[in-house]
Amino acid sequence: TQILGQSQPRVSRHLKILADAGLVERHREGSWIFYRFASDPSDRVLMAVAIALDGLNEATDRVIARDRERFQQSREARDGVAAAYFETNAANWERVRGLHIAEAKIEQRMHELLGDQPIGNFVDFGTGTGRMLTVFSDLYTQGVGFDASREMLSVARAKLDEAGVAHAQVRLGDIFSLPLPASSADVVCVHHVLHFLAEPAVAVSEAARLLQPGGRLIISDFAPHNLEFLREEHAHRRLGFTDDEVGVWCRDAGLERVNVVSLQPEKENSDGLTVKVWLYRLAGQAPSVLTRGAQHKLSSVK
Image 1 (cartoon, rainbow, N blue to C red):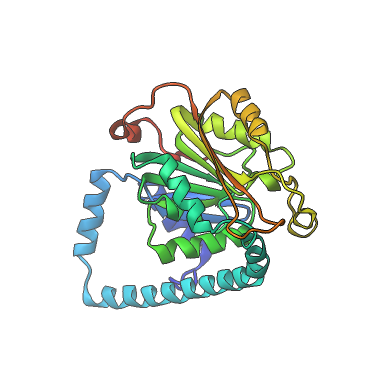
Image 2: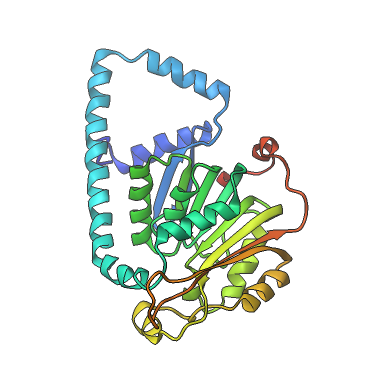
């Protein structure tokens, strides 16, 4: 309404028409409803849009230019809110990051473990700032990240815009029960999330549910440690995990081990944290990337 200068009912009516025509997709986050371009609009719809755009006149162009200006103002305001939230919490995050190997090296190792094979659908549990969606954006066709924090989703959307990642989206969701169909993901990523959970095994089970045959689950988290301040000051529910713990959860969920690596802290001190990366896969043969789009889509979120 701020961008178009129209009433909420009128905007809603136009959006409904666009959704019914297959041009946009919608999803709800509490009292908010988000719209985005449809992932695969039909040729008929694209032709209709092209004809409509070709018919724009000078007066219409001025209206669109004004709308674009308001859109940019709205985006800048949203980015400002996200930046303020990130700045408020950055000091706490940096204290934890200083205890383990650099994030860039963790990301590089995760990338190496997944390899260069194209990924169809990529799902990020507890997406936070959306960093994993950016890190692996060169591999996947379609990505979606879920987080329980609206503030973090605002940060993630701003970061994805900044990185130019247009083939990913972030949504509000409970990672114990996501609104995605079974066998809809090629890779599920759980990066520094399990230690916040009271029941990490349930999250692993949900990840396995989403994987198609041959799909992979990549988890990064801490090895066991004794830093109680992380529990008291940073809401860590678990102080790291052993390979056996993660292995039991994955095997119970029907996953088989592919690889496990340990990344030691760069600073030699007693408070250093070892980061583990576990890669598991669901038994079965994954379909080729060329046929995945016809078989399942992350846009089927209800």
